[in-house]
Image 1 (tube, rainbow, N blue to C red):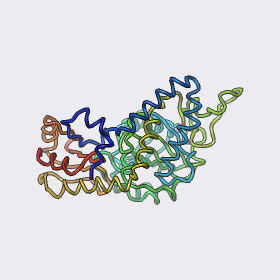
Image 2: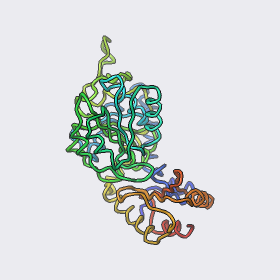
Image 3: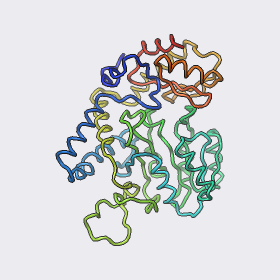
Image 4: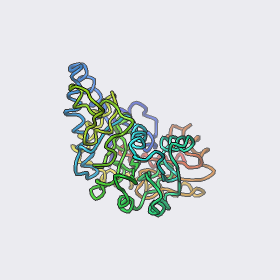
Length: 365
């Protein structure tokens, strides 16, 4: 079955392109254009009062969509930011110890990896990294104040096993557990209902939520980090009109908010979510569509000299081998967009692909 009609603007913009990097920059569906235009129209019509609509309607709708996707009991635990790096900084600032002991996997996304290495270099944190397969057991040693790990690793597609065991360690006084869902959110069905009161979960709309940049979110478990040191004025937005005294914080997820931001990503996110609901497309259905295409690709045995690293729940295939850079360059020259990380070629599948696209990619390979 083909869903290309939902992505007509993006596909028609570059009709000769085979875009198999949905895990990197997911093409935007037509609904996102409608959301972007609505953001502009609201800004023109409402001017200063647009923030009343953003905080009164747009954000609550986005919170409800995310809470439903993750089975979170309370949408109000969700805060938004233009990027997940903002949340990493605020989480570290909210920890109650001066030099937190941080445990992470050795395959984390660039923003966390770079920032954590710099903090370790300066002495702001004490950092330990281990392979993902060792992380849960290492965390259970009790030697850490913060455990940070990806739900699905961005480079290899390996999937975290043992979120419940990590959650069992979490306490408001430490340790805290942060799950980076950037390659998990809307890529694989995720139910956080059993751990929502214990773990932080951050992700964004840039990838499988199909909403583009500027719409990242953090689920904040109640009682964890009530007063982040790095804070913006929206963290007490309800009190802006009142007389100021001290530094107040919202009691829910808004305590992790920053300052003025571009709300258009939230409009795009909501428009895409409404489109998916109208089409009867949930994450399980989209995953089944993509898994069938992944199977079609793998069954052809196209890369016999390369090793497949990714697990079944990843939305992309990660192939490792010496030939990866040359193959990536050759495909790019022919208009087939894939993604390269060192000697790992990543091929990402999406709702805008069908069997003919996979056949065309296989022919090029």
